[in-house]
Image (cartoon, rainbow, N blue to C red):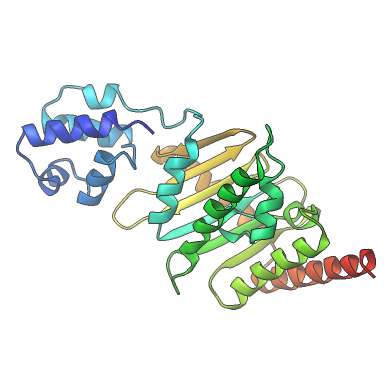
Length: 269
């Protein structure tokens, strides 16, 4: 992600002889938010940019040249990955695949091996390592708080074979039993729900505005707009309200994993 915007902001701040904290105070923002904008990790909202222009006497430059936070770009996930590592709370919704931070190695390899155009075995290895590195956010005992909302299709579509699915689902069950994550299932019987258009991640931070990340086929978007984030949070809350309760979801996942285990034994006597 290009950081011309953040570098220009920093240059204007230094020219005005302001510290990050002084600029934060003048623009009614936090110092950490200013730091992330300057480093290219965040894009300010339109209101933030307007206040920065006022604080730095830069006319409407920062408002007019805001990076398009809703543009789909090839390297979209770089920004999302940085944000994921900083978040205090992650709320995931998955429509087709297990969310990346919850994936096992064999499940991740099965997913990544279906890429088009095809990737070499070496490239697949590299992608798997990157995917598993993301799961390190779960290494801490408490932070980030992780919730996942799984469409039943995530559990029913066999990825990598019955044994891979049994292992993957029990990995999620283990995270829930250790109280490291809360995972809820949206059953097929529910019918239509508000999140059926794609996957979604909601992120909350310390001293910074929340962010949302949505993904579809070959496209992803980081949403920094407060109005958009609020809409996506509302859709997530509606869907969560229709999901199976935690213990019911846990029992459903255990039963599904057991069924995969039976199928695996049937195929391998």
